[in-house]
Image 1 (cartoon, rainbow, N blue to C red):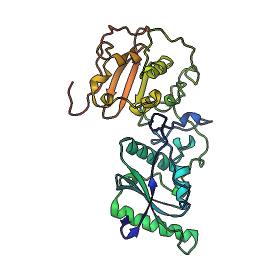
Image 2: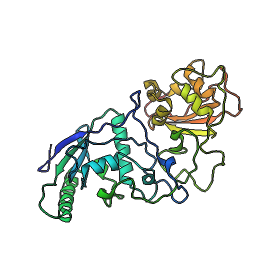
Image 3: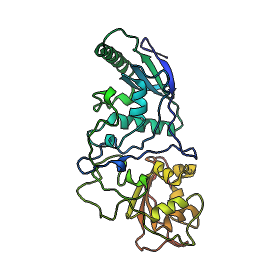
Image 4: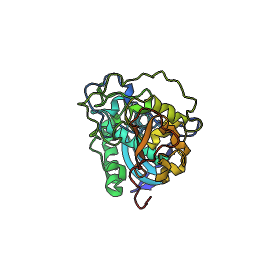
Length: 334
């Protein structure tokens, strides 16, 4: 690949870690932070995140790199050590980096890579090495920055358009921050529940001024599985909601796939009616109805669903009334 007269060699495709079922293994490190009573999760700290690395052979070198999605350059950066930058920086999001003062670039790019791979696009890394440059490290870095700026000016990559948090890429690693806390309490025992509770995309709607009850922490409640509990591919969702203590549970589709340890059906992403609260016409809805929840709102464009606890604490029967499902996707009527 040649960009603005600079030769770039292809390093590798980014392949995030996956579960045994082939789903991208989502990393939600916020709950692992030891001290969470000082700072809020920053705008990019909610993820979703994935884990990946680059080959060790031949990548411990300096240079200017580009990230390409479907062969289109989306990001240009410079680094002292490409292996360290991707394997220990972008590819491994530490709990500290999710909070204010953490490395937002790591989080932002990791999430972008997650969504690109999740959509089926090939994400690749290309490098213009400068390790053969005869000069000091300061001179080498100055050269890298000149090349990087030239490329950004000429290409205007999409992921470089929000770089206010980029002050020192080569120091953009997970261990460089002191220990703070999100402005929200821990919630359910499942790690996924600790990622996005109210509004996945922003901390603005997660007020830290209202602490949750002490019981809303990491502890499983002892439960007995009823004889009529759903079985099969959605039984994990039933178990998850049964042990949840909140009256409102908002999750992205990607997070639900972590709960299920399997991809959601294609219909769940394309058809609003799939989320109907009617166990007669949609048997899979028993997974949430019998757990004591209903689908209160679903957004297909945002890939997000909100469950609300049924007003009576009993589990829904097979004659449950079908409540109205949430927002209809653009260009589609029910």
